[in-house]
Length: 225
Image (tube, rainbow, N blue to C red; front, side, top):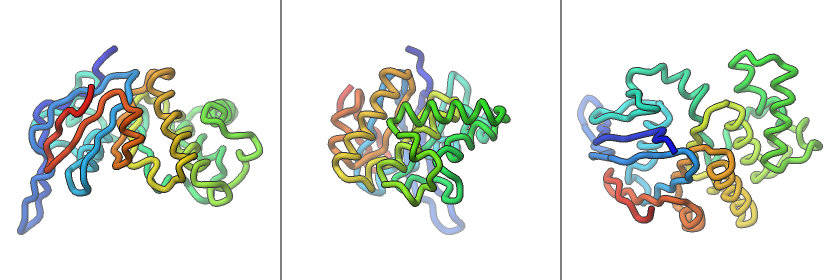
């Protein structure tokens, strides 16, 4: 397996006119395809800051974050998010005025995939996450939270990348849907060869991960690997 993402002494400091807040300190780790990783820790520990760096939403203020061996500062980060890395959120973040099928087609249309091909692939991805065709024409508000999160995962698959970043993906779900989403994320890592990185407070999500990290005051420590 190849190291897809490597953090080398990554630090991050939020700066304002009057204040500096150190959110991450000397984070060193690597993430490989075919594994699911859980990053746990209390609120305010730096987990979401680290996830935002992994998503290319910002760059480290210290150290290096390498994607496929390239410094994230040196790549087109918009293109990286469009073609390599996808983020799914607790609140789903689907487009409310697009159907389920159109939501999944969207990242392919950004890459100028022909409509007919995008539609066929979107149907395939929705099938992979266990959604029935009767839901494809519905708006997100017409389906359950668990179904919406599955649509979000299908949309991430449609991006064409192999990096899936998840921020509290089961936070709004009941226990049955939580179980379904965790199984899906594991399947994406183990069967589809994604690198899956999940920020979570949920012990059941962490138990399912191959590698578990704990973050405290911006410092990342290995719990299990």
